Image 1: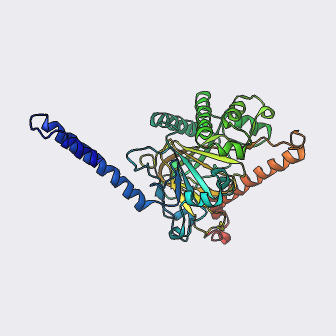
Image 2: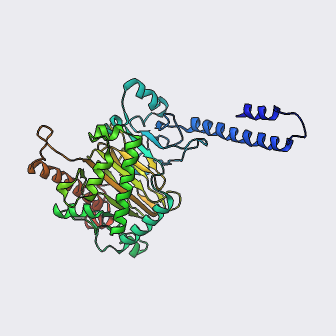
Length: 408
């Protein structure tokens, strides 16, 4: 670009042929060139173990150093691309090598050596994919305001409803720290399986939720074709999501969803969190509707690599705080958690799903026993989260003074 500017300057040395215009053009091109160079230098300086839709490292995330508490691990906000010339479509975050950043090879190099696709790494819990600009700012703001209002007016919540009493504002401390608002289809499935859940989303919000999920699936079909083909055995995930969103009966769904999902989680401060767990589905979609810059403090999503031992003293491999309107994609084998927020409100659309379980040899649906086993797993997971949440609340510890320090 600098060479082009010099050529323009040397086309005509005559002082009468717009010398000022040539000078201004030269300075403009020089500034643009410097900005692009600066963007690449910063990308090389801060690049972590990530891969992008342009198959090059970019500014996204830093690997977390080992700490004593996973929920107090150092957090790094995911940054929008610092490449001035081109905009990123998606980026891949490697979590399987998070404990030793100095020894990490770039994913585009490892992909050439192993032949693994993005679907392979997601299925094995080695990476998380971040999609950019799926939902615009105005849509995020509108949905967030509506969901916060619905959550505040809801007179009952599901297992996440546990008061945490402190010495401060009694009214605020009695509010649920996490309310999950299921879609209307998710609420129907929960009711048919006798699973308790909050009141479903209003129709106009539910419609927007379905639109966003359709948009994410279209994004995946176009930008990450290995995901639908390898995880769902179909060339298009959009069609499966469309059938599941419009079906009136669970038996007509083309996809199998996690209990009470799709849903929108509304986290309140202080302390709104979701403990470490696995979704056990083929793919999980998280769409933040609130901004870490303006709507809340703390928070983020923590991930543990497959090699990590998850426990109260095991730090997360990486913690990301995506911008509002982006989307996180990861597999059901990945242990992850919602970090507690300290201020404000965090709102996230969540949806975990798999292909409809069928007998691959006959094509028939799964048996009732197999379906009951899957339902039992969902109930056990929910009960475990509920018990941990209640135990860590001051209310239950106060009722068991002799065991109050057992969870510390």
